[in-house]
Image (cartoon, rainbow, N blue to C red):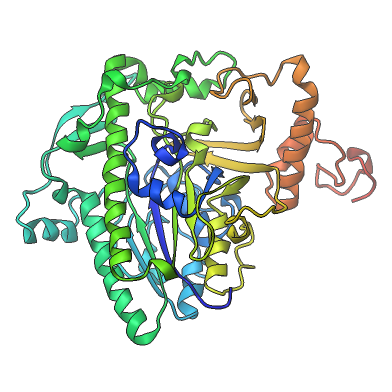
Length: 501
């Protein structure tokens, strides 16, 4: 592509892929996203590099896997990792600015603690934290200017912690109209900035990148009446993995279930939580619709690429869990990914394994910028048609901890998933026979060949990337030939296979 393209990037937080009609669920209310998928490319195997906000968002900004950029935890639960990207860190926004782009970000930033979106060249109000900052001055001014009452909630839903204390707030009813919600405010601010950028484009030829980051549908699910009661809880189909027993699973999963108070909440309340979550998705979809309508009104649809995705998924009761954490299930690692590029065909569906990381190189290519600095990213532009493309037939994801350090690596293929948990039980799932990941077959004798093949492949990918997690695997598992001294002493060639290092 020779001419820079305008880019509108729409992002949600903690969003289940099965809440979107375009991904096969008829019991949803997502007309805006469904229409976007119909005129663009829907990726069915789109994964987050890590299922936690800050590291995933930092990967999008930098085009680097978490182990490489090293911003590995949310500030609010940081367990000793760095809290900000270094000053010299590459970010695609700097490259866009250097190319002459307007660059804006409205909504959740959450990439580090001290450095803000403005430090990376983005226009827009700084909205800190992991949840809707409802005390923010700009939001309060929005309410006051529009004659709307201050933010208030009711009908709170929470469980009980193992120590008897109150659990995390999971959902609540917002006491006010849709126009007073933080989601409406974010869409309004985005439309205002879009209108400003449209003027700059018309009069000065300045292209734009505009990112709208919703804080939801991350819990707590706080929505007004229209959406709180949109879905009938009695008609909600519970996830099959709600039958999780944790037998043969890493013990941390049972502990996390207790932390998220699943067993202290009646099943009918769990149904209500899922119903409210879907309502939250519908609220956000309506606001996305407002932004896309503004793009059309401004005559920009034909010259603006539009992305939609999320930083990661959400459990909402699956595996008797909420939120996300040290469990590499599809619920939180597979997300939606939709890309519309003007001039490319609509209604395309791709089955390749792609990543949130791949957005970085795609953005750079659309802007006519060398994507090389986004070292772990690969442009999705060739996949936005029905043409065959050579692509990897697996994907690797990683996790480093939330609340406490907990390193994990995952390899996902078309049929199987391998999860390496150094302190605990490794996991292997046959997703063809067990799509809900209830049966860990890692130790099953008939899976020995699969286990060995996948362990060898995961090891090779991590080693070639420079992800030092592979050192643990060298001594603990059958990883094939080891062409280096794993003791790192350089003294004894007998400690490795394959000849001198």
